[in-house]
Image 1 (tube, rainbow over the protein chains, first blue to last red):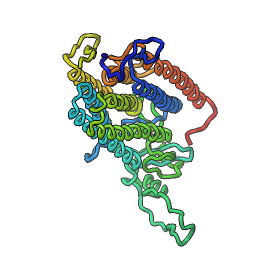
Image 2: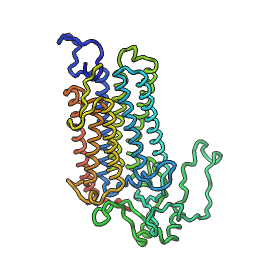
Image 3: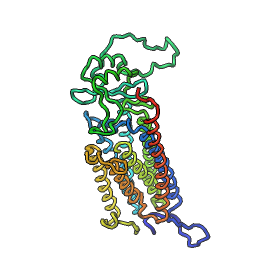
Image 4: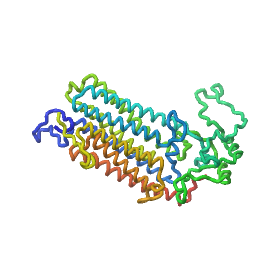
Length: 329
Length: 127
């Protein structure tokens, strides 16, 4: 018997069927088929991300400046939380493989515990991803978008730190008619309003000589290669005239961190991966209950645990690549 | 039940006594690799971000290679590819590698061309 479980009696008859030249059962083989095709799907997405990034290589957002938050802590901690998520996923992969190992040895209780830990790990990961999305959508400092769709961010010249809109925007007395149901079509909502109007940001910017504009353009050569371009005060005063709307946070249409495509791909790829993790957790739960009920004990082998294990490891494998291409490179 | 798990990693440099030990060993290795990636990602040493190899920053090369190393150990040890028959393993591994390299080459080459068109063409984007 090979290291992996084979089901049914092996037939020695070459032409009578029942041969397993690859030494894998039907179910396992189909799981591998699925995994290979799903791997190609993810590769397509990541390659498309690479396409857009190479196309806008000089203005692409720098991930370290986008994902800087850790729950319950204030301050600037790039990478830390994603590293934690990666570790959680690898850890749950380990408990999964331990469950498979225990399954080979027909240790029902060990399989139950390891499956349980795997499910917990998956749930923590999905929760973390939800939090990461919420933080990304909510935004950090706020920015101004120009007529051409470029993003202008603000930096405090004295500290060299990014300046939030609320730090310098001037509250202007203005009157605004709020949309109410009785005034128009009743099912129209008022929609999202940024915290400050573009005029308030512009006024505050003019009144505050220490605020500079940072553009999306990345220095391609010289001492500051790889950093975003910081304009002088004179250039900034000229540039702010182009501003048309205030952008806070990111969505599928606007993105205060820079290129809109960055947000689109972030939502799409991590969303697709998160959906895989979620369905993996659901499948794990189903198998978990089957193990508790003793289904595989009666069947005589735990190959089902091995099959969901393959799927679960695949999810981890994809995350390794997403982590590299979204957060590191 | 006797299992024919292959218990060696690093081409036989490290041999584990049983499968459980191998799993923990691989976890430690993967954690170390991830830790290296994170530390490099946070500090971004100047030596690595300012030197290039084949048009890409040395740091990015390191990230990509470490990623492939991690992928190898996840597939080989966690997904048991090490214990599968050679034919199955090759069918699973080389099919995507071939298709993905092709796709990535085509798309990145094309993207670089589009970038140059935008850069040198009469297109105004910064307004």
